Length: 271
Figure 1 (cartoon, rainbow, N blue to C red):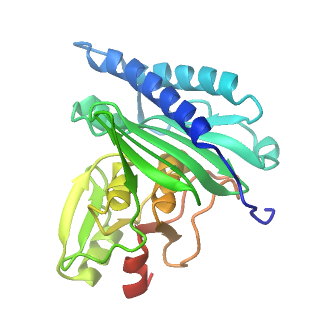
Figure 2: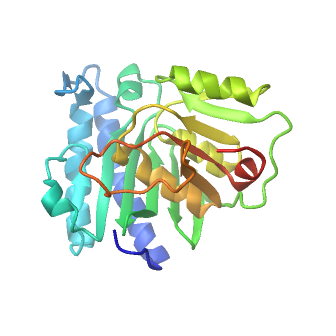
């Protein structure tokens, strides 16, 4: 992997990316509003709905028009050989519908995730939650934002102190024994459960202190939200190694365990 260099992405380009995510969200909501929608199981037994495919097609088409210089990897089109992919310096990594189980449950906690990866780092990210009408976006080194009801808020947790009783955010669907052991080490805490990549976003907003993910995820599950959190001044570190969570460094697209948190959390707590 080449040494990472400074990567610039304009706010106008980010606005274009947000529009793409919103269009995909509208496509998802058209399916969400149906009395019934199709659900199938993939080879790994994970569910996929017609909304996943609709969102995938909308995003891939729009990215191909707006940013034709970069290849695309999507959860719904991941059959790209390692020989081809390992040569990519910059590429789009998308999860057209993150939180498919939450979508099926109709609890609203699902997102559209679009990330730009450059030399192994998630440098740009958009996480759009269509039911919540909220969009998070970030450019690493340039800033992060939350848009809701037409109001844009800057996200910056670089100087945020820890909560007196730490707020831990976790998955609504996946609380592993390793996470339970980690929570026991923390001691007194408040637990907040939420689906999809919204867990990262709660940390980026300063509503949670730490998100320990000590279970399996795929690279498209985390990249966009990692970019938002890091652009907001947070960190995502591998557990227990303590180095950065990177992308496209191996043939397998599964992530190692990681901890996503504010810098204040890592200053006080050992990884």
